[in-house]
Length: 240
Image (cartoon, rainbow, N blue to C red; front, side, top):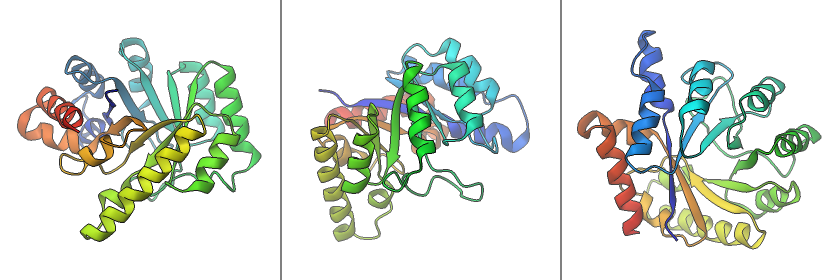
Protein backbone atom coordinates (compact mmCIF):
# COMPACT_ATOMS: atom_id res chain seq x y z
CA UNK A 1 0.00 0.00 0.00
CA UNK A 2 1.39 3.38 -0.99
CA UNK A 3 1.64 5.89 1.82
CA UNK A 4 -0.50 8.93 1.06
CA UNK A 5 0.96 12.43 1.04
CA UNK A 6 -0.89 15.31 2.62
CA UNK A 7 0.68 18.60 1.59
CA UNK A 8 0.42 21.34 4.21
CA UNK A 9 0.29 24.75 2.51
CA UNK A 10 0.35 26.88 5.69
CA UNK A 11 3.73 28.40 4.95
CA UNK A 12 2.69 29.63 1.54
CA UNK A 13 0.25 31.74 3.55
CA UNK A 14 3.06 32.68 5.97
CA UNK A 15 4.92 34.38 3.09
CA UNK A 16 1.75 36.17 2.02
CA UNK A 17 0.96 37.41 5.53
CA UNK A 18 4.53 38.68 6.02
CA UNK A 19 3.80 41.50 3.58
CA UNK A 20 0.01 41.66 3.81
CA UNK A 21 -0.38 41.01 0.10
CA UNK A 22 -2.77 38.80 -1.85
CA UNK A 23 0.05 36.50 -2.98
CA UNK A 24 1.33 33.86 -2.88
CA UNK A 25 -2.08 32.26 -2.53
CA UNK A 26 -2.24 28.97 -0.59
CA UNK A 27 -5.36 28.10 -2.59
CA UNK A 28 -3.26 28.08 -5.76
CA UNK A 29 -0.59 26.03 -3.99
CA UNK A 30 -3.22 23.48 -2.95
CA UNK A 31 -4.35 23.06 -6.56
CA UNK A 32 -0.76 22.69 -7.75
CA UNK A 33 -0.06 20.08 -5.06
CA UNK A 34 -3.05 18.03 -6.21
CA UNK A 35 -1.98 18.26 -9.84
CA UNK A 36 1.47 17.02 -8.81
CA UNK A 37 -0.08 13.96 -7.15
CA UNK A 38 -0.79 14.91 -3.52
CA UNK A 39 -3.50 12.82 -1.94
CA UNK A 40 -4.65 15.43 0.58
CA UNK A 41 -4.37 19.12 1.43
CA UNK A 42 -3.72 20.02 5.05
CA UNK A 43 -4.13 23.46 6.59
CA UNK A 44 -4.00 24.73 10.17
CA UNK A 45 -6.42 27.54 11.00
CA UNK A 46 -4.85 29.02 14.11
CA UNK A 47 -6.60 31.15 16.69
CA UNK A 48 -4.27 34.07 15.91
CA UNK A 49 -4.66 33.62 12.10
CA UNK A 50 -0.89 33.89 11.66
CA UNK A 51 -0.99 32.21 8.24
CA UNK A 52 -4.14 30.47 6.98
CA UNK A 53 -7.20 32.76 6.97
CA UNK A 54 -10.90 31.90 7.13
CA UNK A 55 -11.17 32.87 3.47
CA UNK A 56 -8.55 30.26 2.53
CA UNK A 57 -10.48 27.52 4.30
CA UNK A 58 -13.78 28.46 2.67
CA UNK A 59 -12.32 28.53 -0.84
CA UNK A 60 -10.36 25.31 -0.39
CA UNK A 61 -13.49 23.54 0.77
CA UNK A 62 -14.97 24.42 -2.63
CA UNK A 63 -11.88 23.71 -4.75
CA UNK A 64 -9.89 20.84 -3.20
CA UNK A 65 -10.52 17.72 -5.26
CA UNK A 66 -8.84 15.16 -3.00
CA UNK A 67 -9.32 15.45 0.76
CA UNK A 68 -9.21 18.56 2.93
CA UNK A 69 -7.69 18.05 6.36
CA UNK A 70 -8.22 20.92 8.81
CA UNK A 71 -5.85 21.10 11.75
CA UNK A 72 -7.32 23.07 14.63
CA UNK A 73 -7.45 23.47 18.39
CA UNK A 74 -10.36 22.05 20.33
CA UNK A 75 -12.13 25.35 20.99
CA UNK A 76 -15.72 26.46 20.56
CA UNK A 77 -14.78 28.94 17.83
CA UNK A 78 -12.95 26.33 15.77
CA UNK A 79 -15.65 23.73 16.31
CA UNK A 80 -18.27 26.09 14.92
CA UNK A 81 -16.09 26.86 11.89
CA UNK A 82 -15.47 23.18 11.19
CA UNK A 83 -19.16 22.32 11.46
CA UNK A 84 -20.00 25.13 9.04
CA UNK A 85 -17.29 24.36 6.47
CA UNK A 86 -17.29 20.55 6.75
CA UNK A 87 -13.72 19.52 5.86
CA UNK A 88 -13.23 15.84 5.12
CA UNK A 89 -11.10 15.44 8.23
CA UNK A 90 -10.32 17.48 11.33
CA UNK A 91 -7.02 16.88 13.10
CA UNK A 92 -7.17 18.21 16.64
CA UNK A 93 -3.85 19.68 17.76
CA UNK A 94 -2.55 21.52 20.84
CA UNK A 95 -2.05 25.22 20.28
CA UNK A 96 -0.24 27.99 22.15
CA UNK A 97 -0.10 31.55 20.84
CA UNK A 98 3.57 32.01 21.66
CA UNK A 99 4.85 28.84 19.99
CA UNK A 100 6.63 29.06 16.65
CA UNK A 101 5.10 25.78 15.52
CA UNK A 102 3.23 22.93 17.20
CA UNK A 103 5.57 21.68 19.91
CA UNK A 104 4.10 18.29 20.76
CA UNK A 105 1.05 16.10 20.81
CA UNK A 106 -2.26 16.48 22.56
CA UNK A 107 -2.42 15.34 26.16
CA UNK A 108 -5.22 12.92 25.34
CA UNK A 109 -4.71 10.70 28.38
CA UNK A 110 -5.59 13.55 30.76
CA UNK A 111 -8.07 15.24 28.43
CA UNK A 112 -11.20 16.86 29.74
CA UNK A 113 -14.74 16.06 28.67
CA UNK A 114 -14.48 19.04 26.30
CA UNK A 115 -12.20 17.12 23.94
CA UNK A 116 -14.55 14.14 23.89
CA UNK A 117 -17.50 16.45 23.21
CA UNK A 118 -15.64 18.09 20.31
CA UNK A 119 -14.86 14.69 18.79
CA UNK A 120 -18.45 13.54 19.19
CA UNK A 121 -19.91 16.63 17.52
CA UNK A 122 -17.50 16.44 14.59
CA UNK A 123 -18.11 12.74 14.03
CA UNK A 124 -21.87 13.22 14.30
CA UNK A 125 -21.54 15.71 11.42
CA UNK A 126 -19.82 13.08 9.27
CA UNK A 127 -16.31 14.52 9.66
CA UNK A 128 -13.41 12.13 10.24
CA UNK A 129 -11.49 13.00 13.39
CA UNK A 130 -7.76 12.51 13.95
CA UNK A 131 -5.78 13.36 17.08
CA UNK A 132 -2.21 14.67 16.85
CA UNK A 133 -0.39 12.78 19.59
CA UNK A 134 3.06 11.84 20.82
CA UNK A 135 4.13 8.25 20.04
CA UNK A 136 3.33 6.70 23.42
CA UNK A 137 0.94 3.98 24.52
CA UNK A 138 -1.10 6.12 26.96
CA UNK A 139 -1.99 8.60 24.22
CA UNK A 140 -2.86 5.87 21.74
CA UNK A 141 -5.05 3.94 24.17
CA UNK A 142 -6.82 7.15 25.22
CA UNK A 143 -7.40 8.03 21.55
CA UNK A 144 -8.91 4.60 20.97
CA UNK A 145 -11.34 5.13 23.84
CA UNK A 146 -12.55 8.33 22.16
CA UNK A 147 -13.51 6.20 19.13
CA UNK A 148 -11.89 8.59 16.63
CA UNK A 149 -11.04 7.61 13.06
CA UNK A 150 -7.28 8.18 13.20
CA UNK A 151 -4.23 9.43 15.02
CA UNK A 152 -1.29 11.41 13.69
CA UNK A 153 2.02 10.61 15.34
CA UNK A 154 4.16 13.62 16.19
CA UNK A 155 7.50 13.00 14.46
CA UNK A 156 9.26 16.09 15.80
CA UNK A 157 11.53 14.28 18.27
CA UNK A 158 12.66 11.95 15.49
CA UNK A 159 13.15 14.74 12.96
CA UNK A 160 15.08 16.95 15.38
CA UNK A 161 17.27 14.23 16.92
CA UNK A 162 20.80 15.51 17.52
CA UNK A 163 22.61 12.22 16.86
CA UNK A 164 22.06 8.85 15.21
CA UNK A 165 21.43 6.92 18.43
CA UNK A 166 18.68 9.32 19.45
CA UNK A 167 17.20 9.25 15.96
CA UNK A 168 17.13 5.45 15.95
CA UNK A 169 15.52 5.44 19.38
CA UNK A 170 12.83 7.86 18.23
CA UNK A 171 12.25 5.88 15.04
CA UNK A 172 11.70 2.75 17.12
CA UNK A 173 9.17 4.65 19.25
CA UNK A 174 7.30 5.63 16.09
CA UNK A 175 7.34 2.04 14.82
CA UNK A 176 6.03 0.66 18.10
CA UNK A 177 3.38 3.36 18.38
CA UNK A 178 2.19 2.80 14.82
CA UNK A 179 1.87 -0.92 15.44
CA UNK A 180 -0.12 -0.37 18.64
CA UNK A 181 -2.40 2.19 17.02
CA UNK A 182 -3.15 -0.10 14.09
CA UNK A 183 -3.96 -2.92 16.51
CA UNK A 184 -6.51 -0.53 18.09
CA UNK A 185 -8.13 -0.08 14.64
CA UNK A 186 -6.86 3.47 14.30
CA UNK A 187 -5.69 4.79 10.93
CA UNK A 188 -2.11 5.94 11.42
CA UNK A 189 -0.74 9.19 10.01
CA UNK A 190 2.51 10.93 10.92
CA UNK A 191 4.01 14.36 10.55
CA UNK A 192 6.05 17.30 11.85
CA UNK A 193 9.58 18.17 10.82
CA UNK A 194 9.73 15.62 8.00
CA UNK A 195 11.98 16.58 5.08
CA UNK A 196 13.77 15.15 2.05
CA UNK A 197 16.33 13.31 4.22
CA UNK A 198 14.36 11.86 7.14
CA UNK A 199 11.03 11.02 5.48
CA UNK A 200 11.80 7.62 3.86
CA UNK A 201 12.30 5.75 7.15
CA UNK A 202 8.94 6.96 8.47
CA UNK A 203 7.22 6.25 5.16
CA UNK A 204 8.58 2.70 5.38
CA UNK A 205 6.72 1.95 8.63
CA UNK A 206 4.07 -0.53 7.41
CA UNK A 207 1.22 0.83 9.53
CA UNK A 208 1.73 4.47 8.54
CA UNK A 209 -0.83 5.24 5.84
CA UNK A 210 -0.38 8.99 5.53
CA UNK A 211 2.29 11.65 5.98
CA UNK A 212 1.48 15.35 6.36
CA UNK A 213 4.42 17.48 5.25
CA UNK A 214 4.54 21.23 4.70
CA UNK A 215 7.53 23.37 5.64
CA UNK A 216 10.17 21.33 3.81
CA UNK A 217 8.08 21.17 0.62
CA UNK A 218 7.41 24.92 0.64
CA UNK A 219 11.11 25.61 1.36
CA UNK A 220 12.27 23.36 -1.48
CA UNK A 221 9.78 24.92 -3.87
CA UNK A 222 11.71 28.20 -3.67
CA UNK A 223 14.50 26.52 -5.62
CA UNK A 224 12.77 23.88 -7.77
CA UNK A 225 9.15 25.05 -8.01
CA UNK A 226 6.11 23.80 -6.13
CA UNK A 227 5.14 21.09 -8.61
CA UNK A 228 8.63 19.59 -8.59
CA UNK A 229 8.94 19.81 -4.81
CA UNK A 230 5.75 17.78 -4.35
CA UNK A 231 6.77 15.23 -7.01
CA UNK A 232 10.18 14.74 -5.39
CA UNK A 233 8.59 14.06 -2.00
CA UNK A 234 6.18 11.57 -3.55
CA UNK A 235 9.10 9.81 -5.26
CA UNK A 236 10.95 9.55 -1.93
CA UNK A 237 7.90 8.03 -0.30
CA UNK A 238 7.43 5.52 -3.10
CA UNK A 239 11.07 4.47 -2.87
CA UNK A 240 10.59 3.71 0.83
